[in-house]
Length: 306
Image (tube, rainbow, N blue to C red):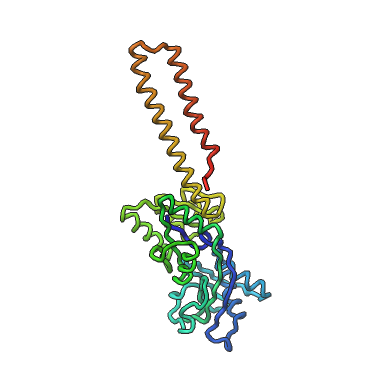
């Protein structure tokens, strides 16, 4: 089972924890946050929302941007007073100063710049859902080893993986949306049946590619449309519930089929040989239907143990 990080394993509620200008004397943190918020105002990504909220909370006046372009899995860019400002991954820039090359704190880091050069980095912090660690353990007990898949840098991904108990070898970070899709396809080529859990636009292709796509209820419409299951509760234990309930349903179907086939295999020859009174046969058939329905209705009382 492959888990997206932001909004799936973590809460998806982010806040800006650091703004690091390359030259604070030339352009301070508030000025850079102002530019980043102007660009991200057109995006629905959790990182974008955190940047806009941070600017608003500091009473920073955000200018109106034009020509907004979303760069799925990478960031966004827009024109602010004639200057095209880019907010997103480091590889969107021709030059990233050494001082900004690596994040210094845990979280999701994006870079802000123009003219092909990054002028600052912004780090937003996210919190791991309290229920995620138990859910990862429960999935493992069901025979479903969890992989963590994210577009964030490896430092942020490894921190989250450590918190929830996913081994380092099953962490894949710094990936674009098409890479997520390719990673699912690669697991399938190796003979694995793969479930994907995600909530964002960036997860849509991977959700569609997986043998089972599971979308979190608070995710985007695109993710929901691409998934096979949409959860009403946006927490990982709901994934465990869905899988266990599905397995219980399949067991019930097999029980019902076993009873129905066994009954008919035994009763039809007796009826053909005239050894079974039609009245008794009719009553037995009705009893068989009641048994199958009653067995199925037991699922209404299903609850996950533990």
